[in-house]
Image 1 (cartoon, rainbow, N blue to C red):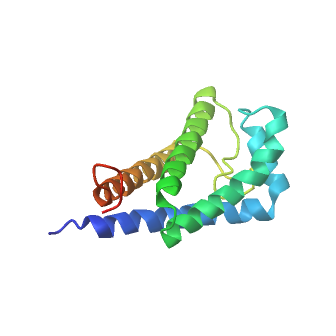
Image 2 (spheres, one colour):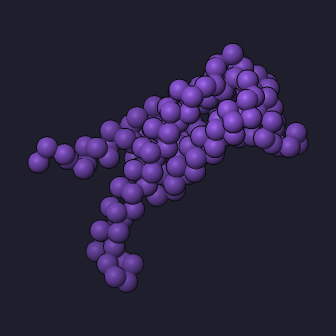
Length: 151
């Protein structure tokens, strides 16, 4: 068999783990700069900006570690897909508004450009994360009997 689902699952998991871990590092180190990047997107009330700027990078790091070590995959895969959907939606929204702001995707810098290539990149990550959800829940379904008790 040319297409091995297990290998594909682990490749997706590792790619997303690297993306999330890498994306979190600079934002954790520079929360003030990341707060400015979040503010520039103009999608959140001001009261939430600092909270998001502090919590989101740590959430990305924890998710990345869960994906890397293949733990808590039910929750990690769903949360990864939800975050990627939110990120992609925010980029789409700002591109449609013509707002020229730094992405803040992989660094706290507001210099990181946001364009249609950013959107395409995030669409690819979103597809990978949805694929991961499907793999995780199919695997989970196979390990449970009709009563929901592990076989």
